[in-house]
Length: 404
Image (tube, one colour):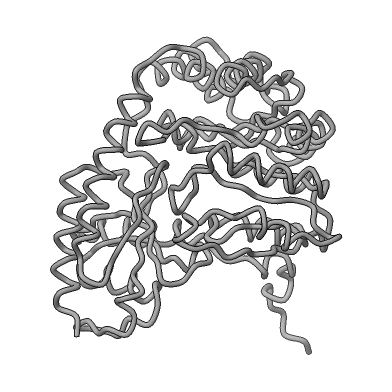
């Protein structure tokens, strides 16, 4: 008699992916905090700011006004038009509402995009380090991730030569993230123009993840690769949302802009998965995108101060150094000098063991670089108070100095 096991029914696609390491570490840190441990979490990828009151009130009003029914699968027309207006205003990009799909967060927008264009065995070029879900989403669709290593010397940005060398007849898409998670680096207009030439010359698509677009420092201005030319705009699937810029992570609203055939396919896919994103959240997001507010600039100033503090402190710690990020709210610190050292309870063999020891011994939560495809680094979020950052850096510096 054959023993029944449900595990044997799990699909190959599901078996090929791993749990998001950022979500796993954040969950463990939250559990330790519930147990009364003095956890400082530098792992979460969300602003610590509250959603602005005027946006919250818009969501409340939507509920009170009965705006709680299904909408079109791709979102309410008013919000799709607001996205068009935003893209025209900020990047001088012209789209129609039919080219916009509102989704349950930018993560769903990315998955919709990949599902719309990727066939099994199609190749997707992903610069390393990468956001944790890119590679696994490609795997879920039977695609093949082509990982291109980048270095500190190139600010972790793929070069045109690297892109050109990675392209094969099976290449369908490049995934580009600017500002980047986890590194915080930003592609300049000149760098995007050079990459765009390769993309057009080789007739591939580019997915441009622009979710951190509003969080830039040092006076930098944002450029989208879709701005370079109409040729590359037609090949660009632009991804953005309100989660990071407006501290609306839990509202779950992302959006995409793409050529009409791709946008139509994405909307059809979404109609058979989640259907429309939450209706009150759409109305609140409409307010976020259309009402003037100082919230963005105020938050940007605070994040820049926190960045400066964290980077200054990290670079004072023995065996650690960190480049200063240009955007987002992450520091991607080089900890290669700590590999091989011993703490009171273990040997540091890689970034994952380092993060485990930090959580266990000094109650500091951060994310190993291996989760982003690059060993020898850790990601620390400065989306927390200056007081918490100071305390975290004090703990880390003191701990490093005890290592043998």
